[in-house]
Length: 111
Image (cartoon, rainbow, N blue to C red; front, side):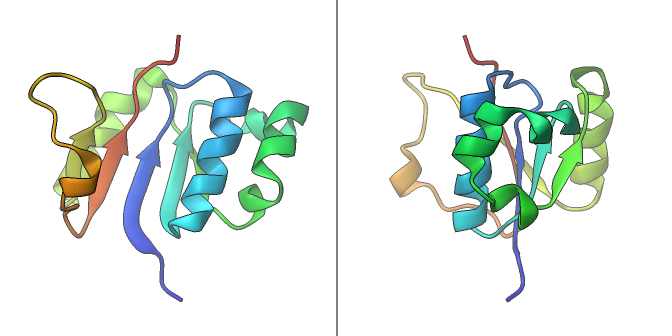
């Protein structure tokens, strides 16, 4: 089955449990890739316990925070829509949002 043209960028997410859960979610959605700040996260025991085996099936790409602007520019040139996740008064509810065919979903920093 071909992958959905959805790239989830979690380079700003630092907590292993969150990254493990995101990896599982990317597997469920058959995402094209999960972008993280370091592929070393795959060795973290907490990440592995939450990701289960999803990191073996989801392509993971390393893009550091410093290289993120360049990566996003390249994806835009390739025809991807750049989307940010936030909660504001002007936000569109996710269950009412129609994702473009090629989407890059940028997640913010976790506190």
